[in-house]
Length: 145
Image 1 (cartoon, rainbow, N blue to C red):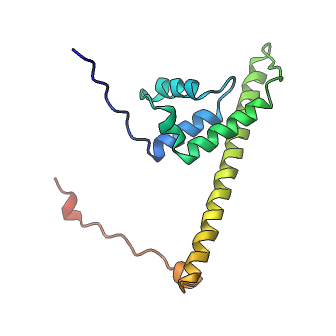
Image 2 (tube, one colour):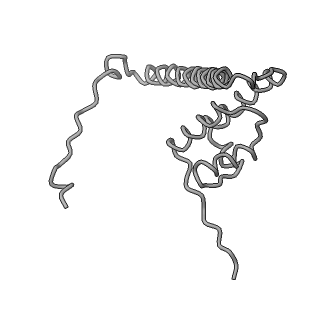
Image 3 (tube, one colour):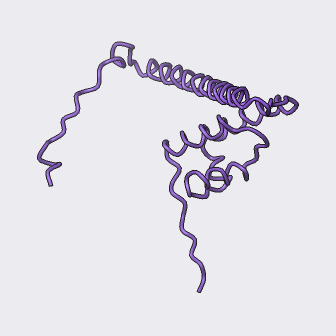
């Protein structure tokens, strides 16, 4: 009897966030295969490199972390002082997260400028675009069991 391999859960925003947090805390050698294994250990789902690489946030976080780690290849970690080692790892993770968030923020700012320009070419002004969203009405009778 042939083993039927089930399809991995779709990569949604929650999973992407978890993956970029894994990358933010990554130390040591980083490859797509090692990342896939770490994701499997934490999420119990195996994704392909192609599936992960197709998501901009994951691809950019991977490349940024790989670049960051390349600059730290020759650093020595003080193993005799666990508190110092923990602090250095925490600092490295926070620096990686901060760098990734800056990159994502710049990408969103570029997108905003593009949208603002396109809106202005359609005659939509800032006052129109800044109108509050209409309130959401949820009919209580719909949710009754």
